[in-house]
Image 1 (cartoon, rainbow, N blue to C red):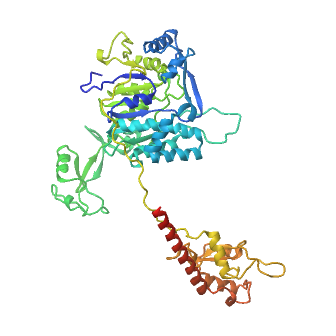
Image 2 (cartoon, rainbow, N blue to C red; image 1 turned 30 degrees about the vertical axis):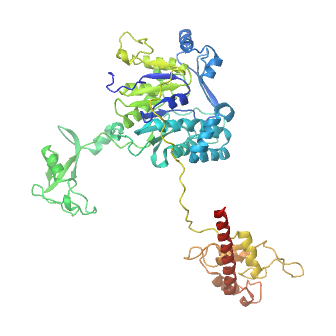
Amino acid sequence: MTAQANQHPLNRRLFIADNLNLLRQLDNESIDLICIDPPFKKRRTFVGKIKPPLTDAELRQEIDMLAGWGITNEQQASDAGINWPTNAGDARFKDAWSYRDDVHEDWVKRIETQHESLNRVIEAAKVTSGMDTAAYLCYMAVRLIEMHRILKPTGSLYLHCDGDANSYLRLTLDAIFGDNNRRSQITWKRTTRGFKGSQFAPRTYNSNTDTILFYAKTTDAFFDMGRVMEPYDSDYVAKAFKMEDSKGPYYLDVAYNRPSASPRPNLCYEYNGFFPPHPSGWKVGKARMDELDRNGELVVRDNRLYRKVRPKAGRIRNNLWDDIDEAGGKERTGYPTQKPTELAERIIKASTNPGDVVLDCFAGCAYVPVAAERNGRQWIACDISPRALTVLRRQFAKFHYEVDGQQQTEQPVLLTEANIVTAGPHNLPERTDEDPEQRIDMKEPPPVEYKTPASIIPEPEMLQMLLELSDYKAWCCGFANRRPDGSIIKTTRNFHLDHHDPKSKEGSSNQITNRAPMCPHHNIRKNNRRVHLAEYRQEIAHAKELMVDNINELVNLTWAGDQALEIYTQARMRQGNQSALQTTH
């Protein structure tokens, strides 16, 4: 990689710092792509041994680096917001969360006052998943707000997560970026290898996938599918493209559109004595047809015009990525959640151009910086652990790059100005601009129109009102709750509410004007049949199931309907008066 004509001042910079502090110091709209693999909310601390084992010289280098920044012990490291290097050679990170240990109160205040939609997502998480999930979302949200700010209008964010965090992070990103800027939810199948057996019977399915949430800053975000097409396999090409010439394999396809296509007068023209047989016309315009002819891509057979169809670069790639295996071999660092460089390379190729700036602010495994460097992109990295320096140094040594002025091989590949350097928590860049004006992220939702509006009278109250009209007898058959002496008990027990008119008929509603108290037996037997109550009464009488002598002893439906309408009118008036009172206050 040669020196950049428009090199970012922070290119090839690894910051050992709290990434929120770094993000707040980056200028507005200065980053082309953010690709991160943050903690997944797994409620545990991940520990692994870096490979090969940490050497005394590497540990000393980490400690000396911190000392150069004035950090000489664990307490000073904690005060600076970073980890102190252990001598155990661990590759560790904490993924357990609480408000007391991980959340600053000013974060919560900012979310509550400036990002109401986001605050509602976090409040919902408290109820559905617990306070630890809400604390995790607060930690992520304040960082994602800054990431949104620093992305260029043509920029994108790819966030790696798993099934535990997916739904919560997706709603968080929807609140910050807008669900209209959610481009894709990519599923990555981590491995094609089988799983070890167990002496215990499995109680669920093995988890073998992660999720990558892909969001654009705006509708102008850059994306080029052509760079990441899924290549055709040789068997498919051999079967589908059976003809071949000096340019390669192809098959013949008619040059005109199918008959069922819409008429295209602009594509209906004469070409070398041929006319399209259907109003849908030729498949291409006259200029393109001339180009195909000049290039020898048109063929006449059986008095028809054909064109040669050749295999393209590949198929459009879908959002199931099952062709990239977990990081292995020399690429392994020892981090238990390390991702393969090939995964980041696909993302970088699709969503950036050479020379663009890529940010990874959870860069412990260094796979994003390596992928960016290999593909001619500029990059900025940040991690809370000084062990990231050792991992980055090792990863870049495989590609012959300098780190902190120490050439990793005898044959340098980078220019002197391409040296990779580190910076500490007290050496963050200075902002050259101001925060954008506060945006209002909470829109008033439009009024909701329901298929069947709820009644303005609560159903228990409605049932009692309607039973009073019939002396607490069911409107279908005359059933009543009675004492041993035969007198009626005035109770709503053992009654169901149903509709006069079937719910599927036009004009039906849940208001009191269309409801009737029914006995459980006849209401259940009626089920969802489209029958009016007056008709259903006749069926009950014909079956000799009336609890009175004849239908005329049942409540008169016309009279009862008028009474229900009066009750409904009074309820509407009360509702209007209450609304007016609330408005004045």
